[in-house]
Length: 138
Image (cartoon, rainbow, N blue to C red; front, side, top):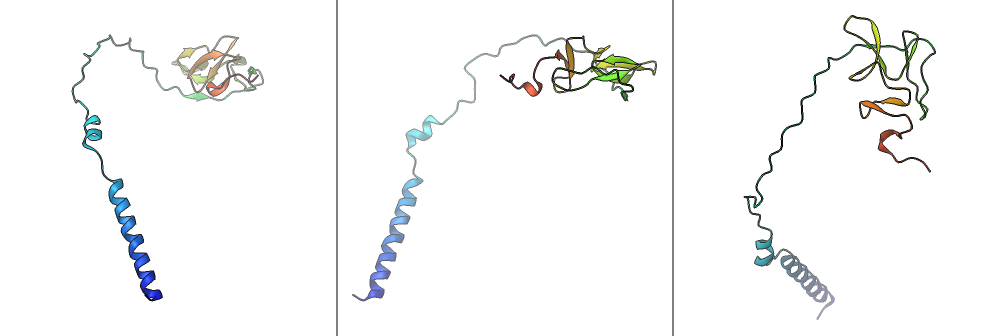
């Protein structure tokens, strides 16, 4: 047998082996397919619960920039705003009468002295609470 015939037979043997292996990989047993079938009807009856009370809509407020140096400093290093020469633990907005007022989203007057206005939670949170839901540094 010549060298070319040996190479040809070797390539033929390798290609037949690859074809045989690849065809065997795609086979599935009917038992495996039967286990994957899903029943389209739930066996558990639905549970009906009353809807939570609706929250009053808050009109989009016009922002007012902080003016002065009375802005409170938070425990995490951020700074509140200074509205009408008073410390505001929130943001400055125009109220319904068109005057500058302090608010933390839907909370008129801003947050309490031990809280800060959190832009992620859109609510007043304890001043020492870490930002972005991260655990406190140890």
